[in-house]
Length: 354
Ligand SMILES: Cc1ncc(COP(=O)(O)O)c(C=O)c1O
Image (cartoon, rainbow, N blue to C red; front, side):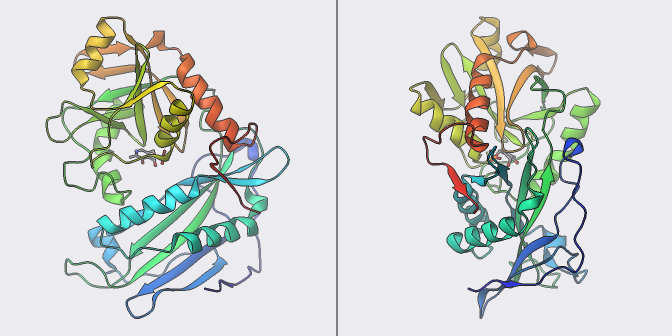
């Protein structure tokens, strides 16, 4: 499919790279295409960034039939722009779509469209330390209809947002709260899909955690509320003795690409990385026995986020004296060095944009 391009008459001014936040600024152009049953995905186009006009009855607004992704483009020291494992995001987008009854996109074509959009917007990819261009591919159900069924028509779009360092004050441990009052996802639900409802479901517990002075919620499984699942918008890892443990994928955990990268690197380095069930009781006992060495989250936004404190009911677990541990630091350095082209890419994870 040929991508139609409409140029903008007036370009926005670029932001100051030193004061970039997250998700507030958008570039000049976006990519879109539409789906109707007779034509499939069609009319791919790059156009000036603009609002989407919608009938108030548009199905995504009522029943949440939508999926999205989040990945980043990085500027290397020599000025090249590169993506980190973008095919994994497009595969996950299609897996999410299957769960939400949304027609799949062609991954190869969509990757080319993404690259073309970013190449057009290359001046928007910041070069300051730890900054990047966040990429948000999204699919929404477009039928104007108030009955509950899968939509017949869809819109796919990609928008881009220059983002700053996730840690303006440095790479410091966060505090997380285990909630016993709410669950994020249940067996057979949509937890493993990247779909808006999962995030809406997490907001109240997140607000309560913030009020109590915690950064994010550590979710327990929705069936027994016993096994650890994931944190806010990250997967979670525990270092107990010499074992690096992450909860096994069970249908309710989002299969993170950073999680997959930590596991891949750990195996490449012959470390003992295990995907298995881990209960809150095992975590608390390992801490009491002095065997819990480190805890860290893993996700695109922060890459690796050390955890310094976990609260569960009245129990407070302080991890590694609230300091960043060597395992979290090593994975953070290794992954960001690959993303920013400061190190070789032994795993073949980098896809250049131009
Ligand atoms: C709920 C949730 N879990 C985990 C992750 C980490 O996934 P990734 O490493 O692909 O960013 C994210 C972020 O996308 C998320 O939203």
